[in-house]
Image 1 (cartoon, rainbow, N blue to C red):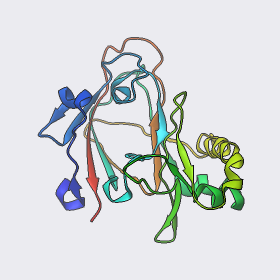
Image 2 (cartoon, rainbow, N blue to C red):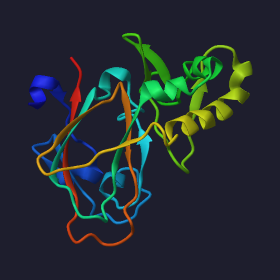
Image 3 (tube, rainbow, N blue to C red):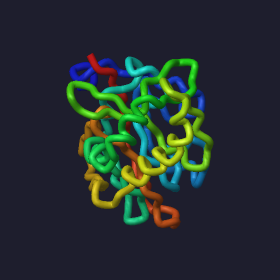
Length: 210
């Protein structure tokens, strides 16, 4: 199925290799406890901040689809997968904030796209909530607007986490979910703190677009 929808991306991060099958399939199991290590957050019991997958990479190297398969939904202690439509987030931003964010990108050698761009007439964000970690950014065009970037980012985060926009996924064994990385942010709530009797187990495949 993966090759039908796109080209599978290899999982190369050394921190996740123990969870990888066939070089491309990542087993998401909450066995890392609570951690602030971004590489291990997919395996943790604490929350996973809303994000675009691969937001620090150039647009051509960001996955278009994130395909998740539920092997075990877990018990009532499990965290919840959450998706938030990018179009809804964009509607909550003012035109001035949207125009400013379209001039901001991560300060990274790989040349990531602007935080907000338009693809096929729809708004596409390339952004991750780094929580307490610093966000290094650069601004194209008039530098006089640099002081406005911080407040615009805070308003972006408020729009992303507005409760009216979030949708929780109700996992069932065998269920498949394909998240369009051009249309949705995704993340995860925290578990309730108890050790699960039945841990949740998902498999993840990331696919590049054609």
